[in-house]
Length: 328
Image (cartoon, rainbow, N blue to C red):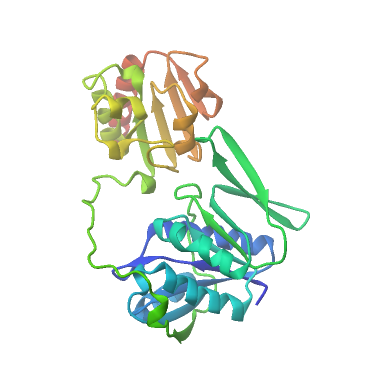
């Protein structure tokens, strides 16, 4: 099966995690370039209904691997199951989202298979029949492009929010391949005693389609209120650079950048944000970027699709009025 691209999806409480849909879209594109087909891997205990739903929704082949208890929280179990599947099937590549789970097991899996692992990738290139992958280093100041040596299978994880999810339309007749793999008890060295779920964020910026973000130039928490006004008029989520969060103007969950969230909305409006590299790392993948800043030399303009040089306290309220008028 060297002509297959495997994509591992993560799930919780019967639902696929959104970041795994990014991995599916990424795998589909790589499969087209390499003249391969996609096979979706779903691992766990009670996954029959989930696997069937995925196959019917996407029309891709789904490998439903039913395993013993403890699978969902054991990197050792993931390594054992995936090692067996990959050894037997010999896919061209294994794609996954760069999550805490992937960070835990993927390097070990690569070592077990004597293969390379490229982590946290944000893009790829395809030249002369060879793939290379890019990841950001030194806080996003540099982009490192790498390629694999040796034979496949290759293992790649992608950064959350770095790859837009197009319409994952159904492609063909659904097919589910069901297997059972027993993981020996001695393989599991760690046991999860209890799971603590963090309080859900009010806004998941990584999934937002419209984002209005404000920066240091707004001056104060009171000044930042114009961002909330424009966002409300557009029906958008509110984001910020690091300075407003450090200043206590709004919670940490709204921070965008290398030390915050990564976003890829359809529209990103950056207000009074100069464009430090740490912020650009988190939003440069947006489809359309509008920058508003009084400094015509601000770095944010170098990546903006549309730029407005002007006083944010005059421009943003005017935009808010226009948007409200159009929507009414």
